[in-house]
Length: 208
Image 1 (cartoon, helix red, strand yellow):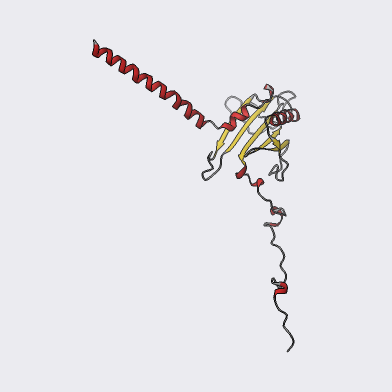
Image 2: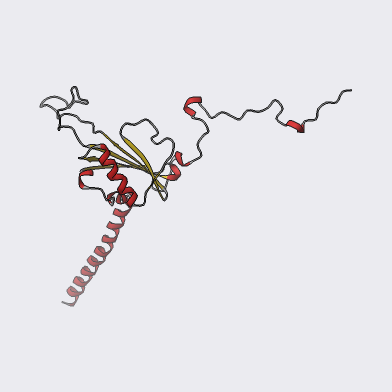
């Protein structure tokens, strides 16, 4: 009987140790796998209609090994572009983000409302635009990739929100920019040098 009791106590102690160790390990792995930037975006005080569907995507290394991390979030909104953009701008300001007036914002021409933001060591691009409306597929036929005719009123409304967050050290716009647009010249021109780069240091030959 004593041996059975000792065996039971040993099994209970082993199970307790496993459970106590497994729970912290589980939450630790979950914390490491979940990027805290997405938690910050989840905490933005935006209305429910401005975040009906959310899709997250992440690439790169959190510790900037070979490539720094890029976080991308796409959200669907039930309201128009301007109203949705103002809602997100208010939420970002309340959360400590500051609007960033910088060239190459956007880096490529974009329709809709495009703004850039900075907070601590992060930069954020906010792009609110008209949704891409695609009609539902017909039975037995592949889904269309574009609209042949515009949708009826009320069938395609709302807006689409894209959020891109990068580390500031990996954002080229935080670095000194060339004085001219490289896309116009191919490269930033070198300063013009005189015929004599040493100037007055070169002695003038005296007449013989």
